[in-house]
Structure formats: structure tokens, C-alpha cells
Length: 187
Length: 187
DNA sequence: TACAAAGTAGACAGATCTGTCTACAATGGT
DNA sequence: ACCATTGTAGACAGATCTGTCTACTTTGTA
Image (spheres, each protein chain N blue to C red):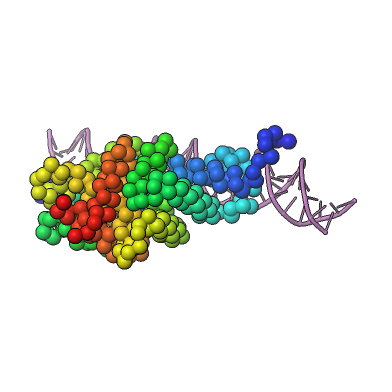
């Protein structure tokens, strides 16, 4: 029976959730497969049935992360007014949250860029979608695309800054000022 | 008698240079000590005499990287005119260069942030010095510090963007526009 | 009822990692 | 002349990592 009535715990999903938690929190290379297996309470053979290699799991993790993050991002932007200024309070929710450890994609590119080129490809797609969500905050204009790219660059900078600072406030303050400067009516 | 080459500039420095190359190019966790030892043509015992643990080498690598990068950055900014606009051509030299793999500090924070907290501390110092070099491009004003912080955030964003894009041009174009917006005479 | 799919537990192979240790050679200051 | 320092070569221990494999159990469905 494959009817979706009961949310069966499903080994596959437990693995993915454990991997998401560990990979994001401690890094991908720092997390051994055995750790994911122990955390998800699954047998080793079951793991390898679902994910033939660690690299497969890494890519699945990034897919999952993309869906999860984008859903949160778009929802938060809408909740804060759907204007470019909404970027600051929306980002604040994330940067100031307990488990914040930077952008999973940026971290993965730094760790694996050379070793697993698909990571770069997924990151480009992720950031393109982020820029698209930002573009949706802007009124149509010939410069909308470029302005969204600039705001996305500033957001990336703020994410990085909040990752190594103790305090997310300076990063958010910078972001607020950059958003203001970029959206200021042109001469 | 085993090394007929040049008298060699000391084992310690050869180790540091090999580590700099490997850690930056392939990542820290991906680079085993044996690899550094082989590349620097040094005996294992010599290595451990100079750097009691891999972590010590990692911190020495970041110190070295900081000195090297700051020297280049300040020189390049001066060479391009010493104005805020000099940021773009200066960064272009780096982002478009062959071995570019992002900021060593940002990458290290992503890889080791939790495992080796001193990395975060060194990164904060590195970025503070980068902001100081940027501040030196700005005329004295009450907003100089904040503006330098904002430009530094934009620079970090551009570095990241150039790291996962194929092409450094979009990152540099965004940086140019953000610099222009931030330095535009206020109302 | 019978069978295929998906699960559990855990030993094992083979590679690689950090760090220690033995044994010996060159070198330079006192 | 002596000897501490610094070097080389490489075996070794002990941990950990990815991935394979055997043997048994549960479960849904034909």
C-alpha cells in the first residue's frame, strides 16, 4: 500500500533529516557516514540502498536545503511587507537564530568546490532563485534584474559577516544601509 | 647529500609555503599532513618539530595568508588610484586570476568554525583590517567607519559570488554599482 | 500462503588520517 | 673536540572513513 495516509517514518527521510542537521551544523567533511547512520537510527545497508554514496547524500542534502530555505525566505519576505526593505527583518530572523552557521551552499562550495563540481552548479541555481525572489520585491523596470543581483550580493556579504561575527547586528545594519542606498531614487 | 638542490630556505618556511598552496587550493580538511610533508620535501619528524599539530599549521597558514593578502590589497588599491572606485579594478586582479578559490578565511570558517574557534577570531581580525584599508580610501567624515563596513560587506559578497560563478564579471559589476550607490553624494 | 521489498545488526576490507618513535647524518657554537 | 640542534628516512600505532557483505526479520500484496 502506497497511500499517503500515515506519515510513515521512512528510513529515507530520517537519513535526510539527520544529514541535514549534521552537515549544516558540523560541516560535510567533518561528518562521517557512520554518524549519519547512528543519528538516523537506520542500518548501514538501508543507508546504502537509498544513497549509493556519500556524494549522493550530499547532493540530496543540498536539494532539500534549497527547498526548505527558499520556502522560508519567500514566506518571510512576504510577511515583512514584500518590499526591498523587508530583506532586513527577514534576514534577521535567520542570522540571529540559534543554530545559524552561514549559508549551507557557500559553506559547501568552500569545502567541496573542487572535489564535487555539482555543488557549484547547485549553488548557482540556489543563488539564482534567491535573486529571483528578491527581484519579485522590485517594481518592474529595466534595471530590476541588475538591482536584484546587487541586493543578492549584499545579502551574501551580510550572511558571511554574520557567520564570523559574534553578533548579527553589524551585518544587518550594513545590509540595511546598502539596501537604502541601492533603492534610493536615482538622480 | 639527499637534497642536491639549493641550500633551501629552511624547513619551516617550505612547510608553510606548501601548506599555503594546498590548504588554499584544495581545502584544509581535504589536505592530509602527509601531503604537506611530501610537497615540502621535509621529514615527518621535522614537520612535527615546527608544528606540533595540524591545527598549529592551520593557524600559521592563516597568519601568513593575512600578511600576504593585506600587502597585495593595499598595494593594489594604491596602484588603482586610492579611491573607493579603486576597489573594483583591484578586486578584479584577484577574482579573475587563475588560482582564485575565494577568501581563505571565509572558507576556513565554513570548514572549521566549530572545531577550531581561533579561526573565527583570526577571521574577525582579518576582516577588520580589510575594512581599515577600505576606510583609508574615504575622506574623513563621521560616516567613514560605517561606510567602510558597508563596502567591506559588499566586497565579501562579491568574493563569494565570483567563487561559485564561472565568471567574475557579474560579481565585479555588482560591486561597482554598489560602490557607486554607497558613495553617491547624499541628499 | 508465498514471495519480494525493505528493514535491522554488525563484521569486515582497505584506505587514509594524525601523531610517535627509532636510527642516523650534517652542522655550528663554545 | 664536544655536543646540542636541526635535519632525513620511514616504520608504526590507533583512530576513523567509505563502502561491501552475510544473516536474519518485518511487512505489504498478489
